[in-house]
Length: 402
Image (tube, rainbow, N blue to C red):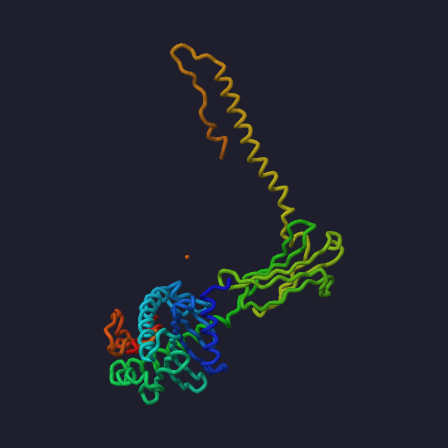
């Protein structure tokens, strides 16, 4: 389904195409994007997305107000509380970013706000160990503020950002917190994600293969499931020769546990099935080919169970029918008798018992105009090097553009 959230993701993907250089196997990048849009667009007013290299990891918008994973391997890199904590942080950042839009609109002397964006993150050369970090703001498609990590200062390409630049440069404590995040915390997370993705993607799980047929007149199905990765080749053969006629391939589909399944159907008459040796061969990177011969013992068929089903129905329903009939007979007989003196009629009132058996850093400057303060203003001041980065550091609290 093509939803509003999907449209925002598409916008962010376009941003990534232009802002993130193509990465080879040894170069990796971790980038976060904030986007605030005017109400008139009809889209969510605030979104935040996280990318590893060019792969979308997770996503938040002001409509759903929830951080949602877009890659299965991300879940293994974070603890279960990650999603709740970062959802709380981004809800606060959403309000700060909306305030920043109002400030930017006033700075540019406009009657209506334009698109306000922020990108921050880090890069790591796996071969050389070199790292780098970056952070920048954009408003109306133009650069508004950029952080010069090498010289540890902010750059304002236009006069509208000069006030913020001077105040942020003067705040040494928060400037050091930002440097620490871009050079240490972000790099730790980048390496953690790369390692987890590689471990997840390099694993292999062999398929479980079954031959299925509803009835003798139905197509014969070769079903492979539970395999990973999703690349797989399934083919039908007759007398050791691959066949293509009367063969229908279904798409490879995901299972709920991160593995995949695929079906391939063969239309064959019962006579041909008896006269020839039909086999299903499954080829997967996890191991040797799996070959199943299509014979009576290897095919799971509904027709084989039909007689059993009928017997079961008879065994259950016949005793029940007799019990019901007996109940009505006893009731009728009882009604036909007159009660004796001093005794009431004793007729059964029931059947006998046996008859039915699932961003942007902390505020770093005072506002030009009085505005609402937000609770988590000093998160990044508290950051310290840790052996394992805490999930709350993924989306730092947003700074107020003053």
